[in-house]
Length: 328
Image (cartoon, rainbow, N blue to C red; front, side):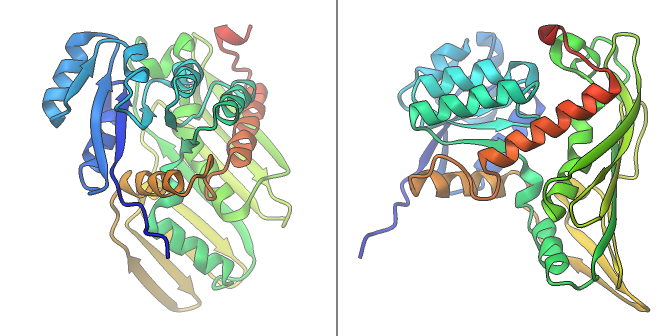
């Protein structure tokens, strides 16, 4: 009988923004994870992040982080405009990679990233944490079990008042817009429950700089089910998701992308279900299990699913008329 490998997986964190800090906090809750290094564009930012989380090595540059032989896996937490280059550089340096979503600017970049992982024999996964949240997984189990009958419509939204014209969310050079940062979640919950859509229609309002400020649309799935989605940088959405079936409905409470509770209704019967949620730790634990098993990709968020996701986002942007400077 072969012993199960429980040796720690050593993490390096690339970038020091809010999501990087959230991941660092999550990793500290996992006994088989060690954060051994952090990299940033400046030494000062790397030093501050390292001091905050007790990280031994702080690199004032990403190449130095990727070259750090004490690092097993890099978490790429930069704006998605930089995901391709940073991910490929890390893979070429021999590191596994967990890359934040949106995975890349477009499907073409995503294919390059996947090719680099395959060529280097290294694990790569898109950090779609919603697909690993226990409450969301339980919703899918109930939907698949037919508890609300055939799914007819899924409706989800995500909006925030992000109005700083100089912030990354509104800058074309940083791949700004509501879709890649927020709108990806309403689409992701529908894809998690129903698979890949066969058609999508979208409309939106662009900023003066040409990124999507507000968007909405509908996707149709092979089963005939529809998913409506909407997102904005100009105000709050309800942040919940609702699944309507022929025999009942499920309401995933806000924030649906990392929910702790949902309510299932069938006729006059209503049941509220609460499930603990450890945030980003769920996807991090999955990644470490897959790496220990010698796998190059996830069986929950495989490369094919990520590529299909990027193709869907590309099509929505095409319909909205959003083209980033790098794509011209």
